[in-house]
Image (cartoon, rainbow, N blue to C red; front, side, top):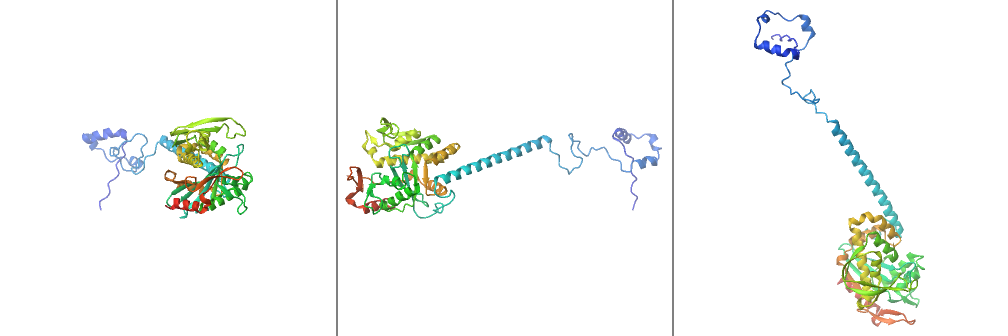
Length: 402
C-alpha cells in the first residue's frame, strides 16, 4: 500500500494570491527548495486548506455547518411572542365573559322558575308527546285588577315536528271555582284568588292550569305568568320590537293603565303595516280593548292575537345576534316579569322548537262555541252554547289534529 502523502503546509488567505501565481509561473529558485523545515510542519499538523471557493460566503451570521438550520431573527421571535400573548389574553377575556354570563343566566333561571335552571321535566323537549304551556299575562301592582289574567294563551307544541298551535281562552269565560263549590267566577280571576294576590304564584299557576285543562281537554301541566309592567321594561331593554299591524284601529286607553289611579284617557291609533314599537307602545297595542272604529279589534280574541304578535316579535328579536350585547339588561328586566314551573333549560328548548311563523291559531269565542250572557250580578260573561262544555273540547281537538 503506497504511503499517504505528507501534509502540505498551511497557507493563509494572505498567501493565496502568491501561491496561485507561483503555480502558474514557477520560479527557478523554487525548484531548489527542499522540504519545509520540520518545525514549520509540526506547527501546522493538518492538511492545507484550499481557498473556500467551494462554500458560499453568507453575510449575516450564516452557520458554517451545511446541515444546521438558520437562526431566526430576534424580531420575528418577538412578534411571535406578542401574538401568542395576545391570543392568550383573548382567551382569558372570553373565558371570563363566558363565566360571568353563565353565572347571570343561571341566577336568572333560578329567579324565574320553580325548578333548577338545568333540570328538565320534558327530556329537554325530546319527547314525542305534545307539550302544552299556559301563558298568562296580568297588569301587575299599581293597576286596576292587578293580578287578573286578562291574557290566557295555551301554546301547544309537538317538539319532533315543531308544529305549533296557539289557543286563546277568553278572560270572561264563566267557570266554577273552586271546583265542585257551586260558586262561579270569570276564569281570569282564578289566578289572583288562588295565589292570594300573587303571594303564592305556584298555587295560582297550578289552579288556572288545571281549570284550562278541564275546559279545553288538553293536558296543561306547565304555565308561565307575565307581568305586563315588567314586559314593557323588557321590550325597551332589547331596543323595541318590529310588528306588522294586520288591521288599523283607534281606541281609548287609560292614561296610566288604571282609571282608578288616573281617570284621564288618551286616544291611540295604529295604522296597518310595519311599525317599530317601544315598550309602552307595545303594551298599549297588546291591551287596548275600547276600540272606536273597528269592532273586530275590540274582542278578546283580537287582543289575544295582538299579544301573540308582540311575543313573537320579542322572541325573534332575542334570536338576533345584534340583540346579544343588551342581554344582561333584558335578563334583569325579565327577572321581574315572568315566573314558570318549567326550568330555564326546558323553556329555552320550547322557544327554539316553536314555529311561530307557521303557527296554527285557534280561539274560543262567540263566533264558534261560546255565547254572550250576563251573570246574576250583572257581569258580561261568556258561556258554552247550550251549556255544552264537551263542544269546547271537541272544537279544540278538531283544531289541533285536523
